[in-house]
Image (tube, rainbow, N blue to C red):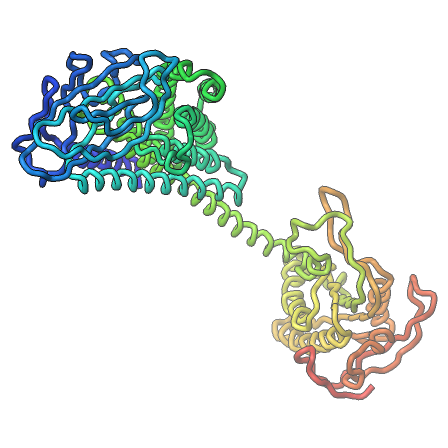
Length: 621
């Protein structure tokens, strides 16, 4: 979704809300509302228009309360001419701030809090309800005595509704269900993003957005149908009103931190510090100061919040030029939210007919920001997958330098886990191969031909080591050193397989006019240490043991005894099936590092099976 489509969707949400919420109908004039020709089939009637307050006209609903003053006490009055019939009627009472007594035709039918002409005797409280209109004929005389000595907004700030009992009760139930749905959706949204942060703590933008959602969800329970009082019926009005302002200010703080974490390069730190200082300071004042202090400071705080919202919109709009991820969605969401807030301000102070869309705008804003965070996570996952693929390629490349078997013997899963000095002790068969007369052979070739020849040779013979359950530890220029972790049989089979391959290899060389080559192989079995040596900037894996020296010495003795494969007595004794090989004792040789001489055997030219390592071989020793 791009910025244009997101903005169109957001404006569509506002327009739909406007059309759904507006319900033009009869309006009171001069303290009287004529419904004598009204049909209840059209639904309940909002008791909007001109009431009287202490004998003077006043617009209802309105937050102008007591003739433009926020504090005071007085009585609202409206006369309603009813349509003919005996339909049981009900009156839907919204929040009336901050205490009221309702009388219908002189009969007291509802009250909330304690109404008092002085602050000392007043007890604030509010909670919406539906009350049954006493049966009777003739007009309804509604008198609502109200007092407020605590809140900035008081009086009849929300519309009252009159109609058949089932219709009014249905409206109330639907309003409650809508607010419960709104709370649940936003609260779950917050839990989801906070939970996402728990599993990926590198980016804190989802955390602050989750906290913001949770605070907005909790704040929604203090408004309109006041769901908080349903869960905690004994809670006082002071808890509710402080909850409204504390969640508002802390929500602002969470949003500022979310914006900063989302686009750190585009945010202005003084603006962030101002938001944190004002938001946290106002929250602290709400918790410890008298309520009149908080309501007096509300307007300047709201102005500061609105200014920060415009700053956020302008800041992120800059991200559109640099094509930052999610900038279009963010701008669209903030724009929708600011439009609904502006409409609500206009409704509160000038045009009462405009429906309240702040909750709808808030939900649209949160949905847009959820898309932003989801896109952020998607980009992070895509980047992580890209890095993972790159790491796999790097590991695959590095395995050509450091065998995977080395990692497993060192109990490491990745080459990145290897540290200098890691080692493991075990028993293995060491295998040395060296090309005969390589020096004189290389003198007849150019450097390029030398590399081509060596790589051609090793490309043919290196895989035979892996085919027989071994791995090449090092290439030595004119040969290789390989290790076989299992039984020595695998190393001997590999040597015999190389002997056969060399025959085919030389036939090809001779056909191409190149001289045949020879090699020598030495094999010895014994304990060794495999690990890493070097320094922090450069290290290598290696094998340290006199077993290595003995295998290398045996390879050198192939020249002395004019044979191609020599194995030690320890290797022969360790064979799983010694009868499978044809070997001949050659001599006892003293090897550097060994106190006692070792037995030397040559592997005869008898044809044996060099197939799978665990196959059954036959031959004579």
